[in-house]
Image (cartoon, rainbow, N blue to C red; front, side):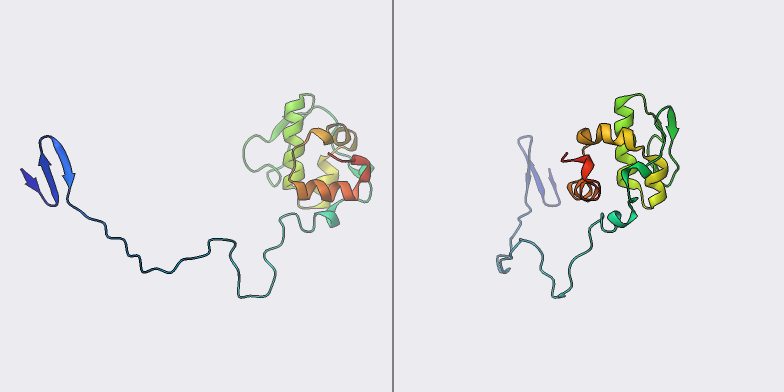
Amino acid sequence: MRSAGIGIEADVIVSRRRFVFDRSFEPRDNGFMKSSDSRRGLPSRWAGVGAKLPPALENLAGPSGGVVELPVDLAWSGDRSFDLADPVQRYLYHVTVLTSAVTREHYTSWLNAGLLRGDWSRLRLPRPLREIWQEHFPELGPG
């Protein structure tokens, strides 16, 4: 029994299609893309964060305990409520606020200086973000 392009012989299906590779292409350098435009690439996601930080760590007057519900503009995906007494939830809370905040008010209203100082060394943050914070607040020290 034969079908268009496929032969069935002894219960084995054999394809009759042949792929012909065109080897006339020119080799490419698959390294980093180079732009003909002399302008720099896109700015870092963290550009401008330093300007939004408060002048002193003590200005971070957010909640220090209890169950906190973040607004949608900070936590738009997943849980928005965090129990700050639970170290795992507090970790997620800090990472969410630190990576999602876009205004100084986000930082001053939702972060607490004492809690942040105590948890700072355990937080897994993007390196550029950590560097900006530690440059602005040397008292946080190296993470």
